[in-house]
Length: 244
Image (cartoon, rainbow, N blue to C red):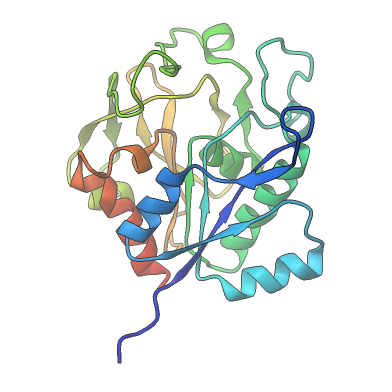
């Protein structure tokens, strides 16, 4: 009899009645399909759970995905709460994902953090982010390829650090990635290592050295799994780490 597939907990977004006639907690299907393709079972985690319920959910899942989405509220990392380009904030989502990120590190539970999740992971560890790259990062290239570009558009390369977990998974020191963000890591959080950079020097991947699997990526590998086997391996390795 085969072992049960690992349960991979995924945080969700929230759409309120200011935008729809009903409330929604959800997740883009690309994340669900990527986790399934990697061999896991996705479990969606809503906002608003109290500490006891969060602990109960966390005890039952085997790994965590922190997905992309709107901006983190700048108050969380001591940023500019009045910056005009901050958009899509969700304090309840911030609370949930910061808790999940810290718990995953503290309890050695595998975690893959993607785009917003990559930034949340950094903030959870005491780091900061740029509210807007084009406004605040000297020499920033264009990173916000959304709207008029397909989600698998690959506008730039990243350089991956040797001997990193990411290098082991990707299998190459350089790879091309999609780019659907306007924010990024400014100051690296404690106990984190930057393991990939874009051509302008922006941190594109972070890891917790010594953790069995704690990886953040600024791009969206869930949109690339059909085009690039290395991107699928990110999910396969998350699931494998969540199995033992």
